Length: 237
Image (cartoon, rainbow, N blue to C red; front, side, top):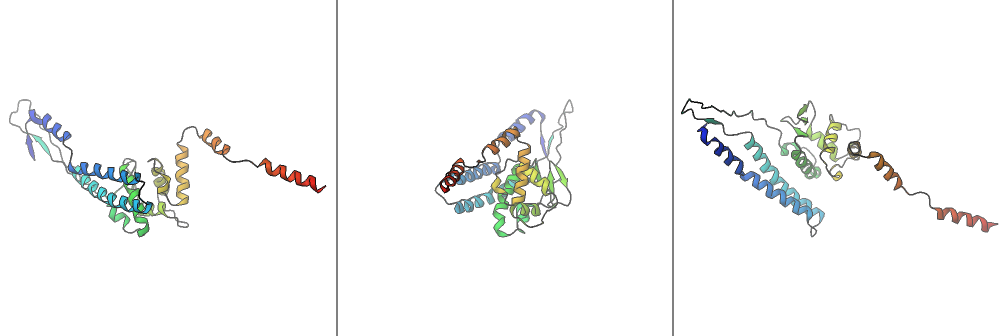
Protein backbone atom coordinates (compact mmCIF):
# COMPACT_ATOMS: atom_id res chain seq x y z
CA UNK A 1 0.00 0.00 0.00
CA UNK A 2 1.26 3.48 -0.93
CA UNK A 3 0.44 6.57 1.16
CA UNK A 4 -0.09 9.68 -0.93
CA UNK A 5 -0.66 13.19 0.54
CA UNK A 6 -3.99 14.64 -0.57
CA UNK A 7 -2.44 17.70 -2.23
CA UNK A 8 -0.30 15.43 -4.41
CA UNK A 9 -3.11 13.16 -5.54
CA UNK A 10 -3.96 15.17 -8.68
CA UNK A 11 -0.33 15.18 -9.82
CA UNK A 12 -0.05 11.48 -9.09
CA UNK A 13 -3.13 10.60 -11.14
CA UNK A 14 -2.09 12.95 -13.97
CA UNK A 15 1.30 11.25 -14.22
CA UNK A 16 -0.40 7.86 -14.40
CA UNK A 17 -2.51 9.03 -17.32
CA UNK A 18 0.42 10.54 -19.20
CA UNK A 19 2.73 7.58 -18.74
CA UNK A 20 2.18 4.97 -21.42
CA UNK A 21 3.02 1.44 -20.23
CA UNK A 22 5.67 -0.37 -22.30
CA UNK A 23 3.18 -3.13 -23.14
CA UNK A 24 0.80 -0.62 -24.74
CA UNK A 25 3.63 0.90 -26.78
CA UNK A 26 4.74 -2.54 -27.97
CA UNK A 27 1.16 -3.54 -28.87
CA UNK A 28 0.75 -0.39 -30.96
CA UNK A 29 4.02 -1.15 -32.75
CA UNK A 30 3.00 -4.75 -33.51
CA UNK A 31 -0.43 -3.62 -34.68
CA UNK A 32 1.25 -1.31 -37.17
CA UNK A 33 3.51 -4.13 -38.36
CA UNK A 34 0.50 -6.39 -38.99
CA UNK A 35 -1.18 -3.71 -41.07
CA UNK A 36 2.04 -3.21 -43.03
CA UNK A 37 2.23 -6.93 -43.80
CA UNK A 38 -1.34 -6.96 -45.14
CA UNK A 39 -0.64 -3.92 -47.35
CA UNK A 40 2.51 -5.34 -48.93
CA UNK A 41 2.39 -6.04 -52.67
CA UNK A 42 5.80 -7.69 -52.99
CA UNK A 43 4.93 -10.81 -50.98
CA UNK A 44 2.85 -13.89 -51.76
CA UNK A 45 -0.32 -14.62 -49.81
CA UNK A 46 1.31 -17.62 -48.08
CA UNK A 47 4.26 -15.51 -46.97
CA UNK A 48 1.92 -12.77 -45.77
CA UNK A 49 -0.04 -15.28 -43.71
CA UNK A 50 3.17 -16.64 -42.16
CA UNK A 51 4.50 -13.18 -41.24
CA UNK A 52 1.10 -12.05 -39.96
CA UNK A 53 0.80 -15.14 -37.76
CA UNK A 54 4.24 -14.56 -36.22
CA UNK A 55 3.51 -10.93 -35.40
CA UNK A 56 0.03 -11.79 -34.13
CA UNK A 57 1.47 -14.32 -31.70
CA UNK A 58 3.69 -11.60 -30.19
CA UNK A 59 0.76 -9.18 -30.10
CA UNK A 60 -1.42 -11.64 -28.17
CA UNK A 61 1.46 -12.29 -25.76
CA UNK A 62 1.75 -8.60 -24.88
CA UNK A 63 -2.02 -8.21 -24.77
CA UNK A 64 -2.15 -11.01 -22.20
CA UNK A 65 0.48 -9.20 -20.12
CA UNK A 66 -1.52 -6.00 -20.40
CA UNK A 67 -4.68 -7.74 -19.19
CA UNK A 68 -2.79 -8.92 -16.11
CA UNK A 69 -1.53 -5.38 -15.49
CA UNK A 70 -5.07 -4.03 -15.73
CA UNK A 71 -6.38 -6.52 -13.17
CA UNK A 72 -3.61 -5.76 -10.66
CA UNK A 73 -3.72 -2.01 -9.90
CA UNK A 74 -1.62 -0.52 -7.11
CA UNK A 75 -3.87 0.29 -4.15
CA UNK A 76 -3.73 4.01 -3.25
CA UNK A 77 -4.55 5.59 0.09
CA UNK A 78 -4.21 9.20 1.22
CA UNK A 79 -2.13 9.78 4.32
CA UNK A 80 -4.01 10.80 7.44
CA UNK A 81 -1.38 13.30 8.61
CA UNK A 82 -4.08 15.83 9.38
CA UNK A 83 -7.60 14.91 10.33
CA UNK A 84 -8.95 18.30 9.29
CA UNK A 85 -10.93 17.56 6.16
CA UNK A 86 -8.56 14.81 5.10
CA UNK A 87 -10.30 12.17 3.04
CA UNK A 88 -9.23 8.57 3.04
CA UNK A 89 -9.39 7.04 -0.43
CA UNK A 90 -8.84 3.33 -0.83
CA UNK A 91 -8.71 1.36 -4.02
CA UNK A 92 -9.19 -2.34 -3.64
CA UNK A 93 -7.75 -4.92 -5.95
CA UNK A 94 -10.58 -6.53 -7.92
CA UNK A 95 -10.96 -10.25 -8.13
CA UNK A 96 -8.49 -11.57 -10.66
CA UNK A 97 -10.92 -12.85 -13.25
CA UNK A 98 -8.98 -15.00 -15.66
CA UNK A 99 -10.08 -16.46 -18.94
CA UNK A 100 -8.90 -19.38 -20.96
CA UNK A 101 -5.78 -18.45 -22.92
CA UNK A 102 -5.61 -18.31 -26.71
CA UNK A 103 -3.16 -21.20 -26.71
CA UNK A 104 -5.51 -23.39 -24.67
CA UNK A 105 -8.38 -22.59 -27.02
CA UNK A 106 -6.71 -23.38 -30.33
CA UNK A 107 -4.38 -26.22 -29.36
CA UNK A 108 -7.15 -28.83 -29.78
CA UNK A 109 -8.09 -27.55 -33.25
CA UNK A 110 -6.52 -29.13 -36.35
CA UNK A 111 -3.21 -27.47 -37.16
CA UNK A 112 -4.44 -26.21 -40.52
CA UNK A 113 -7.18 -24.25 -38.71
CA UNK A 114 -5.06 -22.81 -35.90
CA UNK A 115 -3.68 -19.85 -37.83
CA UNK A 116 -7.15 -18.76 -38.98
CA UNK A 117 -8.44 -19.30 -35.44
CA UNK A 118 -5.75 -16.95 -34.06
CA UNK A 119 -6.78 -14.21 -36.46
CA UNK A 120 -10.46 -14.64 -35.61
CA UNK A 121 -9.70 -14.67 -31.87
CA UNK A 122 -7.70 -11.47 -32.20
CA UNK A 123 -10.72 -9.75 -33.76
CA UNK A 124 -12.91 -11.09 -30.96
CA UNK A 125 -10.49 -9.77 -28.35
CA UNK A 126 -10.59 -6.36 -30.00
CA UNK A 127 -14.39 -6.44 -29.63
CA UNK A 128 -14.60 -7.94 -26.15
CA UNK A 129 -17.58 -5.75 -25.24
CA UNK A 130 -19.56 -7.69 -27.81
CA UNK A 131 -18.06 -11.16 -27.45
CA UNK A 132 -15.72 -12.76 -24.94
CA UNK A 133 -15.18 -15.99 -23.01
CA UNK A 134 -14.46 -17.01 -19.41
CA UNK A 135 -11.95 -19.33 -17.74
CA UNK A 136 -14.08 -22.35 -18.65
CA UNK A 137 -14.19 -21.35 -22.31
CA UNK A 138 -17.87 -20.45 -22.10
CA UNK A 139 -19.10 -17.74 -24.42
CA UNK A 140 -19.93 -14.26 -23.07
CA UNK A 141 -22.21 -12.16 -25.24
CA UNK A 142 -22.67 -8.54 -24.18
CA UNK A 143 -21.13 -9.42 -20.81
CA UNK A 144 -23.60 -12.24 -20.16
CA UNK A 145 -22.28 -15.79 -19.88
CA UNK A 146 -23.95 -18.47 -21.99
CA UNK A 147 -23.68 -21.68 -19.92
CA UNK A 148 -22.38 -24.89 -21.48
CA UNK A 149 -21.13 -23.18 -24.64
CA UNK A 150 -17.55 -23.68 -25.77
CA UNK A 151 -15.43 -21.12 -27.62
CA UNK A 152 -13.20 -23.80 -29.18
CA UNK A 153 -16.15 -25.72 -30.63
CA UNK A 154 -17.68 -22.52 -31.99
CA UNK A 155 -14.41 -21.39 -33.57
CA UNK A 156 -13.92 -24.75 -35.26
CA UNK A 157 -17.53 -24.71 -36.46
CA UNK A 158 -17.04 -21.28 -38.08
CA UNK A 159 -13.83 -22.34 -39.80
CA UNK A 160 -14.83 -25.76 -41.17
CA UNK A 161 -18.07 -27.36 -42.28
CA UNK A 162 -19.11 -30.62 -40.62
CA UNK A 163 -22.35 -32.32 -41.52
CA UNK A 164 -25.05 -31.99 -38.84
CA UNK A 165 -22.65 -30.10 -36.56
CA UNK A 166 -24.47 -27.39 -34.60
CA UNK A 167 -22.59 -26.58 -31.38
CA UNK A 168 -24.56 -24.85 -28.67
CA UNK A 169 -24.57 -21.08 -29.12
CA UNK A 170 -23.60 -21.08 -32.81
CA UNK A 171 -26.39 -18.66 -33.74
CA UNK A 172 -25.42 -16.10 -31.07
CA UNK A 173 -21.73 -16.56 -31.91
CA UNK A 174 -22.40 -15.86 -35.59
CA UNK A 175 -24.65 -12.92 -34.73
CA UNK A 176 -21.91 -11.42 -32.55
CA UNK A 177 -19.37 -11.81 -35.36
CA UNK A 178 -21.73 -9.93 -37.68
CA UNK A 179 -21.67 -7.00 -35.25
CA UNK A 180 -17.86 -6.68 -35.49
CA UNK A 181 -17.65 -5.70 -39.15
CA UNK A 182 -15.58 -8.80 -39.92
CA UNK A 183 -14.53 -9.65 -43.48
CA UNK A 184 -16.47 -12.62 -44.83
CA UNK A 185 -13.20 -14.43 -45.61
CA UNK A 186 -12.72 -15.20 -41.91
CA UNK A 187 -15.79 -17.48 -41.87
CA UNK A 188 -15.05 -20.66 -43.82
CA UNK A 189 -18.15 -22.73 -43.03
CA UNK A 190 -20.63 -22.02 -45.88
CA UNK A 191 -23.66 -22.51 -43.61
CA UNK A 192 -22.33 -20.10 -40.99
CA UNK A 193 -21.31 -17.64 -43.69
CA UNK A 194 -24.88 -17.63 -45.01
CA UNK A 195 -26.18 -17.01 -41.48
CA UNK A 196 -23.56 -14.28 -41.02
CA UNK A 197 -24.73 -12.56 -44.21
CA UNK A 198 -28.34 -12.80 -43.03
CA UNK A 199 -27.54 -11.00 -39.78
CA UNK A 200 -25.53 -8.35 -41.63
CA UNK A 201 -28.39 -7.87 -44.10
CA UNK A 202 -30.94 -7.49 -41.28
CA UNK A 203 -29.12 -4.52 -39.79
CA UNK A 204 -28.38 -2.90 -43.16
CA UNK A 205 -30.43 0.23 -43.96
CA UNK A 206 -32.44 0.51 -47.21
CA UNK A 207 -32.69 -3.24 -47.63
CA UNK A 208 -35.40 -2.81 -50.27
CA UNK A 209 -33.04 -0.83 -52.47
CA UNK A 210 -30.35 -3.46 -52.04
CA UNK A 211 -32.77 -6.24 -53.02
CA UNK A 212 -33.86 -4.29 -56.13
CA UNK A 213 -30.23 -3.61 -57.01
CA UNK A 214 -29.43 -7.31 -56.77
CA UNK A 215 -32.39 -8.17 -58.98
CA UNK A 216 -31.34 -5.57 -61.56
CA UNK A 217 -27.92 -7.19 -61.74
CA UNK A 218 -29.44 -10.50 -62.89
CA UNK A 219 -29.15 -10.62 -66.71
CA UNK A 220 -32.31 -11.33 -68.71
CA UNK A 221 -32.61 -13.63 -71.75
CA UNK A 222 -30.54 -12.63 -74.75
CA UNK A 223 -32.69 -11.18 -77.59
CA UNK A 224 -30.01 -12.17 -80.10
CA UNK A 225 -30.64 -15.88 -79.52
CA UNK A 226 -34.41 -15.48 -80.06
CA UNK A 227 -33.81 -13.61 -83.32
CA UNK A 228 -31.39 -16.28 -84.50
CA UNK A 229 -33.98 -19.04 -83.94
CA UNK A 230 -36.61 -17.09 -85.89
CA UNK A 231 -34.30 -16.60 -88.85
CA UNK A 232 -33.44 -20.28 -88.87
CA UNK A 233 -37.14 -21.22 -88.89
CA UNK A 234 -37.78 -18.92 -91.86
CA UNK A 235 -34.98 -20.41 -93.95
CA UNK A 236 -36.36 -23.90 -93.45
CA UNK A 237 -39.40 -22.86 -95.46
